[in-house]
Image 1 (tube, chains in turn orange, purple, cyan):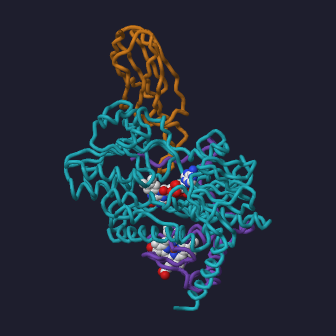
Image 2 (tube, protein in one colour; image 1 turned 180 degrees about the vertical axis):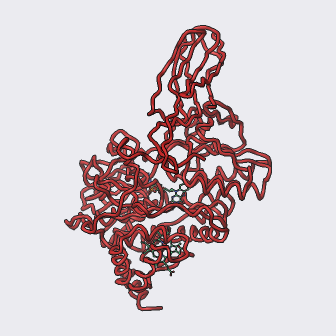
Length: 106
Length: 104
Length: 423
Ligand SMILES: Cc1cc2nc3c(=O)[nH]c(=O)nc-3n(C[C@H](O)[C@H](O)[C@H](O)COP(=O)(O)OP(=O)(O)OC[C@H]3O[C@@H](n4cnc5c(N)ncnc54)[C@H](O)[C@@H]3O)c2cc1C
């Protein structure tokens, strides 16, 4: 299970460009590494990240093996209306980590 | 604790840049003064130490070679010199010893 | 006394005799320059002293009348030493014949081969050696500028900043929180923030035991981490809390008025805030474009000559010295190689192949020392890299007696290196 952190400004003016920071604790094993015993550590990464703003996709990314441990991602979007941002990280192992943040737009 | 991760050679060549180097070939000789001056950071200028670290300015060439070789081979119970001495070839140890002896 | 010291006395006298001929006045741009060194810190003082020992005439320009070392400044913060014990004058350098000039350099002119001081005086050089250290990136953490540093000291240059932080620690009530915010790599003295946390914890444990040290880190790992964390657990219990980047440790913004630190995801109101901002080479290098638009100065790592301008050598924290960390020991080691290279170049000879050492001793407590060491060489691509199989950190399972011995040797290192710098 990965731990996720998200920072969204609680309030914004309509039309304002807002900065959103995300951080997920994850080993992001790229599948090319050996452990102490010389055994291959299997690939285990988060392969996709998505953000929906009131149901509309505002950011998405496919992640590959070059993304570092504990991916930290900052992106910008336009504050359009009061509502909710839904964050989703898709793990190789089938798990989906989620987070929801509220924003009030004036 | 996460396991030490070793790169599989050849797969990601660039990552190998992070690996340390081996000692230079004997042909590329380092000047004795350049070797010995670095010791002064701990042992004082010309090996004369003003504090608790031992001075090394009055050690004969033979003794210096014997000491550094013992440090290098982990044959002496020390806190630091085993780690330092491993950075020098036998020829360099001899050059360092001769350098300090020449100042006596 | 033995024959050897007599020999040394004779050598010293020879140096003193030369000193009389090098009057401590500022030369004009027309005069033959010789070697000019900027900065009487770890790199500059050492370079000047070793050039002098090689018989080269040297002018050393320093903005301050004495030099206070960052190394061991953490012992001042921990109440173990006083500030005067880390401050060194330039009398020894002068006695050995170094022309020490007090002045702030405000420009380097590579075409005229001269430097300009505040007040307009110029000094000409044949070769210039710069070891001016670091400057801070004031824009990196929102709200953290020079004024904020008076309230939330960085104490990453020893001086009034060290004293501000010490006074804040003394004034803090028992039960307070001291935050330390280390930057991401690369920065001056990678183990420094963690030694600082240790020695502040040592002070708090003795004087204000209900207090806490909170490290808000921009990184997920740090120098000698295993040794530090074992020492902290053993000596300080849970007095020190380390929040790595991946647990939200990265500081994004500060509010000095309320002593509040905003990490990317949280907010911490603290009693003492030691913010160590990201760093770059001293801005003086920009007057000659020596950082080539980047943060640090590219150099030929064998001679430390700038790859941007001939006849200017840059060393110490300001330079890109391969894989050597930015430390006082590195600067001292580089300075001796650079001095030898400059002496050789002035004499028309080829510079010799270099060898370097770096060691960083850290005190986890006054009688608990740990260290990391490496030997460095030039590799095929011309960069500085550590020798495989040598160096490394103190053993993780060492007994208390070894830690005590290493603490003594840390003091020995300090005595030796400052003597190597200032005579
Ligand atoms: C808290 C702390 C602890 C540390 N502990 C250790 C340790 O234990 N071991 C270790 O090896 N390193 C340690 N360091 C790192 C060490 O202090 C630096 O790496 C070292 O000082 C770098 O040397 P330098 O010559 O590049 O710069 P400095 O030593 O900073 O010297 C630069 C000099 O240039 C002068 N100067 C700058 N600009 C001008 C100008 N325009 N005109 C005239 N003069 C100028 C400055 O006044 C200064 O005297 C520590 C650092 C800190 C902050």
